[in-house]
Image (cartoon, rainbow over all chains, first blue to last red; front, side, top):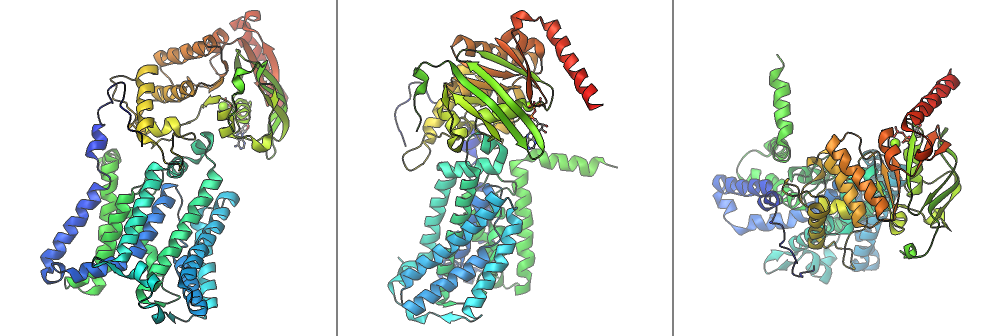
Length: 341
Length: 264
Ligand SMILES: Nc1ncnc2c1ncn2[C@@H]1O[C@H](COP(=O)(O)OP(=O)(O)OP(=O)(O)O)[C@@H](O)[C@H]1O
Ligand SMILES: [Mg+2]
């Protein structure tokens, strides 16, 4: 970035932006949550192993929610990523077992995901079908294909234990699971795409108003096809991480991810309405969602309370974000609720 | 890519030849012939739904026409390559009636979107865009001390301020043809004067403009020529010097009557 001295004094940093650190509320919630966990289950949460397991289990879901952040920023939605997880995971497992070429398998997984994304993007942008509808449809289709191809069977990939690909994608670096570094890397790249790249700006304007985007010269068709392709490719990558983590492939492996990955984005503070989004929020949102599950159980609360608590956290986070972003709306709501007698 | 054609001599900044646009069965424009000189201010008037916005959207690459030809600086336009971006490259700028700004986006994005200042990998030079946006805000638009800066989002601005931003964007990109689609709608009188002054400045600086306006007094006072659209057709070309404001008003009322007569 250019660092030339300015001829006139730069206007002072906007006080609003200076105070408003991206994703601050959700970062606070995250640390409060850790505090609670430590308080309720110090024996578990004052030791490394639980964090280690978080850093293994959270990354695939986090990568999905990072991609979804871009999708939602553009005012779209993608519900087909569990199918990408199923199909790309299969492609990876199949190529690895059949040709003994896991790197080629990785490539096939990412390409397969990207292909699903291209089809989604084409149907959405060119044909004009709303993304919520079409990705439900393609989701059935591709997970069906994955089941047919795999014969509904799981594949073990024990042979990958100790191989280079397993070490690089799923090993440990300085005692920290390498998945965590990959997820962090994706987060940084997605942050720069959304906030600093032309493509991200186009997505924000498309999410803001497609008509305005068109008028200012954005190719809304091409950019949305690119968007869904990127989402598909990220899904393919997440599928490989997930498959490597278990060293086996299940046709159903993406199914639990749908709600978690979406919840992470909204807990993080990205608006459902498009035009604004926070990558930092989704990052911490994914950490929170991923920790709640294991964390609640570790504190001794019965497992079936988990979903109740996740639901509570979700709803309060979304209300909290609306309150912070748009206090006027809350006041308006209060007036409407309480003035009517 | 962007050719610097503006230095070359040309007669008409833009000329439409039998331009037609249909939306399904709605014929929004029929056989429009319109030529605009390089330093001409053309007022475009006509009833709601006459096709004014559609005409300028066609001239600026937002809507492709159903048939017809377009010449820019006397050169024929290849429709296959014509787009908003291309029109920008040819130095056409539009200030739209409906919002031409991204509501939730900061001004530094709104000034440059569609032609960001980037490095060669497409990453936006945010600092530079912010600096220029602040300069435009303070120097050209006089938004000093009103608490608006490059980081403000459009949603926080008043209607007049929004038009100011869109106009400031056109000025910054040094357009040869500036198109204003009802830029004064919903503005306070003081704000309207600012916009009218800007249209005068377009003329003084040797550029051309198309100015769509429902307030006849404004266009009559400002335009070199008035083009009247009615149900997708050009029905009159009027020099304000040849027709007083009162006569123009009567003329348009008559046109209304024939329309109602035709419909009955
Ligand atoms: N995208 C579109 N799809 C279908 N019909 C359209 C579209 N845009 C405009 N029209 C129709 O074309 C006709 C001309 O509309 P246009 O917006 O150009 O009128 P206008 O002269 O700008 O009116 P106003 O003074 O109200 O702005 C109208 O009948 C309108 O309904
Ligand atoms: Mg109009």
